[in-house]
Image (cartoon, rainbow, N blue to C red; front, top):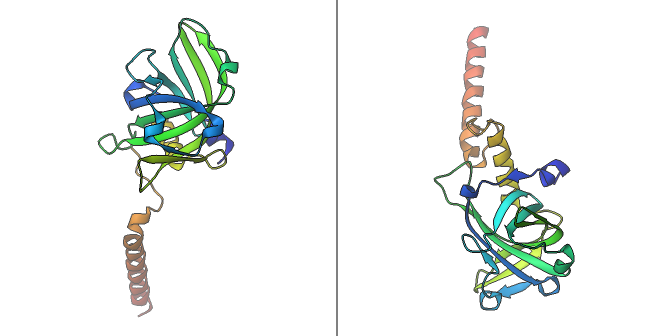
Length: 198
């Protein structure tokens, strides 16, 4: 992942976040986690302390919550911040939302205007177990999460006014159709060239 794409931060309008829940767990205990061991969220959207995703990138996010007093960064040493969030797809607002269950490490904590802001760095991607009510958290530090990177890219294009432009490149689901178009164009050209030679 190139540096620009991994660090480009998208300001997140609250209307794009359909669900948000936050848990705190020991980093050393990350791995396979059954839902019965997950417990209740520490924070949930719409309830005090009113957590909010302020901005997000392919490899991090700023998560804030209401707090009268600063929460020092040191308090999060050895702590994994698990964040479940569901986002509206900016390129398909009528389609299925995108859901993520991610694990972050706290890089910094700042207090401003009765809210505490956590600078989070992506560390784990939660992969649902196909045979059990469980999630496996795998290392995402190197490659990130493809759907989240795409969401950030799409938001960037939307901000630049490019979201209504049809893609000019190859769409894999149209591969055979595109080959038919190329073949038909080649046959038409060959027929036209043959007429010129007569």
